[in-house]
Length: 88
Image 1 (cartoon, rainbow, N blue to C red):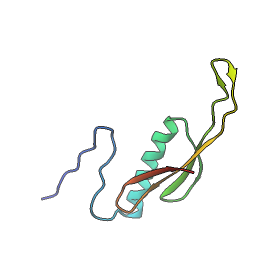
Image 2: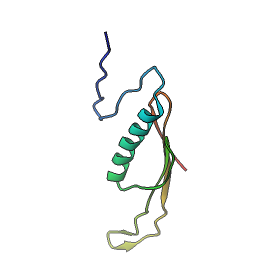
Image 3: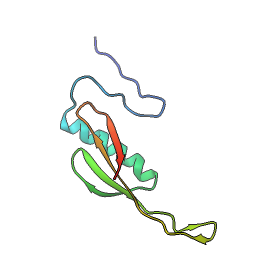
Image 4: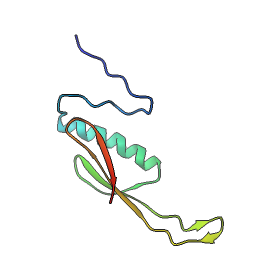
C-alpha cells in the first residue's frame, strides 16, 4: 500500500527517505524559487538544484536616506528533497 504524504502547515512538501530524481529536485527548486520571488528576491544565477538569490537593500526608511546593502543567499534542494537556504 502506498503511503500518502501531506503538505505541512507552511505548505512545504515533506522530505522522503528515498533519493529524489533530478526532475523532482528541479520541480521542488522551482516551487521554492517562486515563493522567494514573491518575497522580493531576484535570481542571480541558477543550476538544476541550486540558486543564488539577491534582494536589494532598502534605500529609504520613513523618508530618511539609508545605505542599503544587498542581501545574497543560496537555496538548494538536496537528494532527499530538503530545501536549504543560507546567507552568503
